[in-house]
Image (tube, rainbow, N blue to C red; front, top):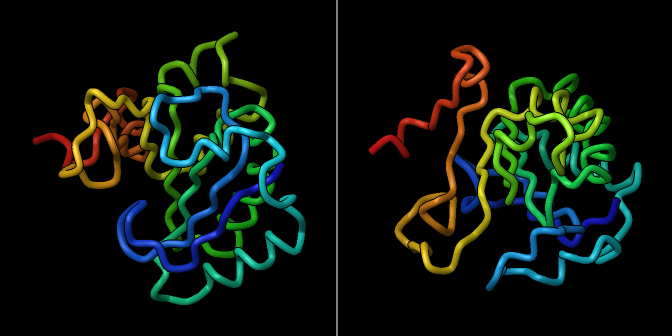
Amino acid sequence: MYYGEIKNCDIANGEGVRVTLFVSGCTNHCENCFQPQTWAFDYGRPFTEETEQYLMELLAPSYINGLTLLGGEPFEPENQRALVPFLRRVRRELPEKNIWAYSGFLYEDMLREGSHPRCEVTDELLGMVDVLVDGRFVEALKDISLRFRGSSNQRLIDLNATRAAGAVCLLPEQKR
């Protein structure tokens, strides 16, 4: 897996102060994507053990609320396979941190057998994510007043509540 950028003090892509990893590779190609350079799977730098260690160091301070995964597309199967071992480490070593992930794919599609982007590690990856922002960016639905998403079709899914309820539960802010 490659990544395009790491932000060490991000407040725009999830609640609180976050470390954000922008992975490379995306097949969605949303019109007017804010970073189309990340569509290429080989954009940026390789995600190495050194990268992983650097992220762990950035996540360690108590003022950091958690990790956000953006893209590109974290849920492309090749990216899922690379992210799962890293997220296992985050959960093991920093269990107090929360994890947000953004995807142009819908949550329901991730669960459906035989659909792209579902693969052998999708359930495990989703199981380590606290909040999923799903849905493609749609220019016609762009709304700059929305927190943590670019268009009104995108959902802020509380995956912990969703797993407990057995049905999609949105973060309270989005229920309005």
